[in-house]
Image 1 (cartoon, rainbow, N blue to C red):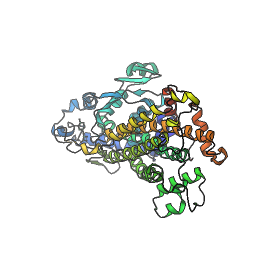
Image 2: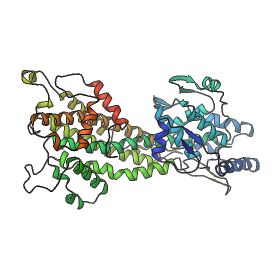
Image 3: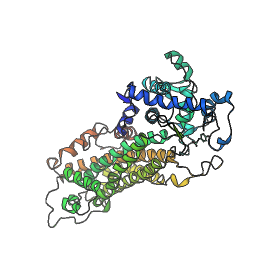
Amino acid sequence: MIKFDHNAKSIEDIVAVSQGEQVALSDSTDFIDRIKAGSDFLDRLLAEEGNIYGVTTGYGDSCTVTIPANLVKDLPQHLYTFHGCGLGELLPIPATRAVLAVRLQSLCQGVSGVSVDLLEQLTRLIQHDIVPLIPQEGSVGASGDLTPLSYVAAVLCGEREVFYKGDRRKTAEVFAELNIQPLTLRPKEGLAIMNGTAVMTAIAALAYKRAEYLAQLATRITALATLASKGNAHHFDEILFSVKPHPGQQQIASWLRDDLHAGEPPRNPQRLQDRYSLRCAPHVIGVLQDALPFMRQLIENEINSANDNPIIDGPGEHVLHGGHFYGGHIAFAMDSLKNAVANVADLLDRQMAMVVDPKFNHGLPANLSGAKGERRAINHGLKAVQIGASAWTAEALKLTMPASVFSRSTECHNQDKVSMGTIAARDCLRVITLTEQVAAGSLLAMCQGLELRFAQGDIAPDDVSASLHQLVNEVREYSAFIEEDRALEYELRGLCQAIEQRKFYCYG
Ligand SMILES: N[C@@H](Cc1ccc(O)cc1)C(=O)O
C-alpha cells in the first residue's frame, strides 16, 4: 500500500503502482490543510480580484481573452474537450496507472490549487483499477502532456472511455455501476491535471527500472559469452580497473570477476586480447551503469515536483506564473538513456555474432548447432536468431536520434521552445524493448555455447560459478538446448517477457 501525500515517492513506488499495488490518499490534517490552503486562496482571489490566468482568461497565447463571469465554470471542461485529439496507439494499462500515480503525486505537493475532492477522485481511479484510454501521440512535452492528460481529466468527470476489468467501457457506465460521482472541475483544475509532465515521467520511471536491470543482465550474459568463446577473464582484473575510476564501470568489472572466478592474472595468457565486445564490455555497460544515478535523480525530482502553471502558493497568497510544465529534464534523461541502452544492444549483438561464427568462436560448431553426425548438414542452429538480433539492434540504434533537438515553435508561437520529452520517453521504451529482445537471443546463444563447451570437454561444469549455472538453469525453464531445428518464436517471447519482468536473478 502506497500512501500519497506531499512526501517524496521513488521510481520504485511508481513502478509498484503501475503493477497493481494499492494506494491511499493521506487523511492527515496537516496534508489536508495544505491542499485546502491552495483551493481556498483561489476562491478568495476570484471573489476579490476576479482575474486569474487560466481561470478567467483563455489558455496559452489566448491569455489575453477575458472569460465572461457566467462562463468561467465551463472553461475547464472546454480545456479537456478541445484537447481530446490524441492519436496513435493507446498507452498500455501499467503505464497509464503510472501516469495517474505521477500526476497524483505532483498535485499532492499542494501548490496547484486543486480541491481534496479532485485528489480523492484520482485516487479512486487507481484504487478501483479504472484506467483511462490514453492515445500516446500529440504531446510536445512542454505545455505539459496536455493532450494525453486531457483523457485523465475527462475520465475524472465521467467522460470518454476506460479499461475496466479487462473490457473497454464508457466511463459513465463504469462510474454508475460503482456509484462514483463524476467530478465537476473547479476553476484551474483542468489546467492542474493537464499542464504537467506526468505521461513522459511515468514512462521514464518504467524505462529506468528496465534499463537498470538490462545493465545487470548484459553483464551476466557477457560472463557467459566470455566462457562460450574461450575469452580472457583477466580483462576484468581489479588492479586494471582501479586505474580507471568510473564507479559504475568498476561495478560491472567486479560482477564479471565474481561470475568468472578470475584470480591472479597469468603471466602468459593464451589469448592476450579479446575483441572489444568482450574486452570493453565494462566500458560499454559501465556507461549505462554510471548514468543510472543521474537518471534516477532527474526522474525522481520530476516525480516529486509541481510541474504545473500557474503555481498557487496558498499560505503566501501568490499566483506564480512560470513554465514548470516544461519536460526538458525528462527529455534529456530519456534521450540519454536510450543511447546508453542501445549501445548495450549493440555490444550483445557483436558478442553473439562472434560466438556463432566458427571463424571466431574458437572451436564451437557453426551457428552453435547442437545436431550430431550427418544431421549437422540440415540443421542451422541459431543462424536466424542471430540475424534477428542484428535487425533488433539496428532498429534500436536507429531510434537513438534525440527527440529534444526537434523542438518546434507551436501554439501561435507561445510555445516556441518545447521539450519533446514524451517522444523521447516513448522511443526510449521501444529501444529498451528491442534491447530485451537482443538479450533474449543472446541468452539462448550463450547458454547453448556454454553447454556445447561442456559436451566437448572444453570446460568442466564444476569450474563454472554457481551464479552462471543458475542463469543457465533459469533460461532452460523457457527454452531447452537446441539439437534439432525448431521454431523459437514462442520460447523467445517467453524469455522477453521474463526479462521485462526482471525474472532472472542477477546481482541482487
Ligand atoms: N501550458 C500553458 C497553458 C495552455 C493550455 C492549453 C493550451 O492548449 C495551450 C496552453 C501555460 O500554462 O502557459
